[in-house]
Amino acid sequence: MSEKKVKFLDTTFRDGQQSLWAMAMRGGMMEAVAGDMDKAGFEVIEIPGNAIHFKKFIRDLKENPWDIMRMLAEKMPNTPKSCMGGGLNLNTFGPPTPAALGELFWKRQAEIGALQRAQLTGNTADQMKRNFPSLIPFLKGIGIQCALAISFSISPRHTDELFAEQTRMAAALDPDVIYLKDQGGLLTVDRIRTLIPIMMENSKGIPFELHSHCTTGLAPLVYLEALALGVETLHTGIPPLAEGSAQPSVLNVAHNAKLLGYTTNVDETLVQSVSDRLGFMAGEDNMILGRHLEYDYGQFVHQIPGGVISNLKFQLAEINLDHRLDEVIEESIQIRKDLGYPIMITPYSQFMCTQAALNVSTGERYKMVIDELIRFAQGAFGEDSGEPWMDQNVKDMLLQKPRAAELDAAGKGQREELSVDQYRKSLGAEGSSDEELLMLAIMQGDQEINAMRDAGAPKQYLGSSRPVKTLIQELAKYPSVRYVQVQRGNNSLVLKNTPSEPLLPGLSG
Image (cartoon, rainbow, N blue to C red; front, top):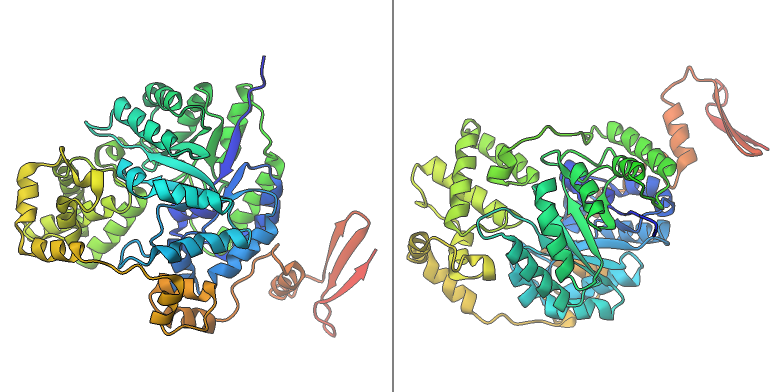
């Protein structure tokens, strides 16, 4: 009888913190535990190496993302590191950047050792037709493995047959991994009993993984059933960056899997130590802790991701409409039906919720329409532009808007594809390094980059690169503590606090 084994991809540094902390995890916090993460036995560790995280590091955290990527490469040399991606445009919600810059972005991270795998998310099957046939060979050519995601959704058209077709399309692109991405936490045990076998059958022997969120509280049970169905690799996080709207806890899943007869390479003692330290640092920064959520059937009805709901509440409060949240959610359900049931995932979930808020606030459906919905009707989003599922009356109405002609003309205009050197010259940045140029492209200018540099050194945490200095700084807050001795084997470190010599360290051993 062959050994039953479960493997884990860790999401703590990327999806865990994106789901729970709005991407606010600082580089110093990662640095404090990265070395032990590398030793913990994960198959892959996901890192925040995509353009949207770079923007967050620069704009809000005032930290250089390239320094963070180099640190992760240095601290985690043994475990393959992965990041999300969907194409070569570095500016998802704005004017597209040249494809040559997207290629340079991937290349540079591979060169410094920060990335060995790309998790390519095609929010629709159309992505597989437009982007991935050229992107996957390019990535493989620079030594990056490709894991191709198929996003899960619930609607009249998202049947087993559709997912089987999408899996065949994915397999034809020859990725290294195919995985089912349940971004809304909508999978149930009953659903995967029909879905996963048909997807694995059509994956043609390509390794198959599962990625889900705990939004409905069901993901830990779904993971255990997936093991019984033959899935070997599960995407999990380390508390406090697990559960809640993030992935299941690796400690919980590993414990239950072992009781079911599975083995794993994950060092649970070491992971628990990492978890304890992350919890301490989360408290220091007043971050929320991931917790188990109660079952909420409403998630299956509206399917709005947790992060989008949070932003929607905030935006409605700003215009004094927070008391109408339920109406906006109900309207988003109807808009999704009108559009032919696109997957509730970025950017479609944002489009539908924004339009729902407009419909509710104006008191008339589609009186004011965002550009993205008109572009949707024009076919700019490929397969998910609704044919043949979109309500024809809604489509005709959108295409008759005066703004439609302007967007149509703009969409048909020829966009010059600049080379890296041409783009550098267009910015007047001929002397800039590749890393500097890429930050300029992502931030669309140097104002926020300069602010990042002016902010000074990034925050460090206990257990990172300066543990002794950090310990001394912390002890200085407690004058009643006379000394601290730290023992490791035959070596010891003694920190003394005397009136004449405050906190001078003495070494022995």
